[in-house]
Length: 405
Image 1 (tube, rainbow, N blue to C red):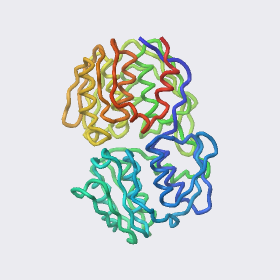
Image 2 (image 1 turned 120 degrees about the horizontal axis):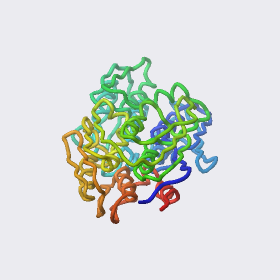
Image 3 (image 1 turned 180 degrees about the vertical axis):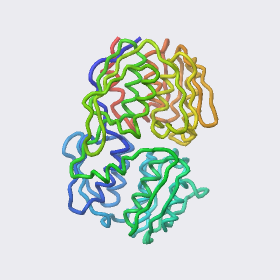
Image 4 (image 1 turned 90 degrees about the horizontal axis):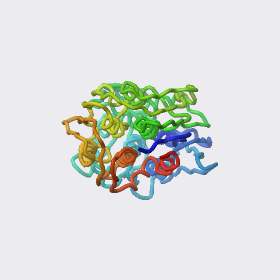
C-alpha cells in the first residue's frame, strides 16, 4: 500500500473563482480587481474567456493572480460570435442570468456534455423576471438564444432543487432590476455568491477548494501510514459536510488556524491514515453540501466495514456524466459490490482489485479512480484522464509528489 506525506497546496476554489470573475468584471468601471489563488482550470478559463468575448480585459500579475479590469454593469459588449463554455455547467448557468439582462442579444452553448444538461431550471425563473430565452431542444437544452433589451423585474421564487447555480443566475439578473428578488431553496446550498456580494473588494484571496482537497483527504484516510497537511482550505458551512461524514466514519481529521478572509471561512487541515472506517448513510438534506464530493466518498465507502447508502442524490445523474451509473459500474469492475438506486446508490466495503474503468469524461470520476490505485491489489487502468484538467490541472503532479511507498 502507498501512503501520502507532506504539505499539499490545493488550488483555489472553483465555485468562488467563477463568481469572482463575473462580479469582478461588472464592478464599477475603471476598478482593478486582483484575484489571488484563482483556479486556472478549463472550467474557470471558460468563464474568463466568455467575459473577454463580452469586452472585459484581463492581465496577469503572477502565476496564480489574475487581474480584472472592470467595465461596470452596463459596460459589457455584444459578442461577435456564439459564446462557447466548453464543459462548464457553472459558466453557462450563471452567464445566462447575466446575459438575460443585457441590452444586446447573445447565444451561449457548450460541448456535448453541456448540451445534455438541463437548463429549464434556469430559464424558467429568468422568464418570470421578463427575460426572453429560447432553447434549441425541448425548451431545456443548449444552445440558448437570449434576446436583449428586456426590462427585468424582481421575483419571489422557490426552487424545487437546491441549486446554487440557479440561485446565482437569478441574483445576477436581479442586479439589473429596480427591486429585490428573493429565492427560497428546499435545503441549504452554497452561499458563495451572497458572501462575495457582501465582502467584495479590490483584493480577493480565494481559499483552497474543499472539493479538490477531498480527494487527498480520502486518500490519506484510506492509506494507513499517511500524514498530510493542506493549508488554507475553504470550510464554508455550506460546503464542509464531506468532513462531517468522514469524521463520523472514523477519519482522523483536524482543523487548525481557522479564520475568515473575504467573508469565507477557511482552515489548515491535517489528515492521518486510519485502520478502520465505518459505513455511512446520507440523504437529501445533506446532499447539496457535498454533492461534488460524493464520488470520492464512494471510494471511502468501498474501504469501509459495511454498507454505505446514499439517497436523495438524483442530481448526480445530470453532472458531466450520470455519476450514479458511472460510479457503480467502475466500482463493480474493481470487485466492489455497488448498486444503483433511483436517486442514489449503495456501496459495500471490500477489497479493491484492479481492472479497466471509464471516467465517462467526468473529472471527479477520473480522480476518484486515480486515488483507488493507492489501495488496489492490481493495476487500475482509467480511460479518459484528460478531463481532470476541467477542475484540477495539477492533480496528478500533487499526487505523485506526495505519494510514498
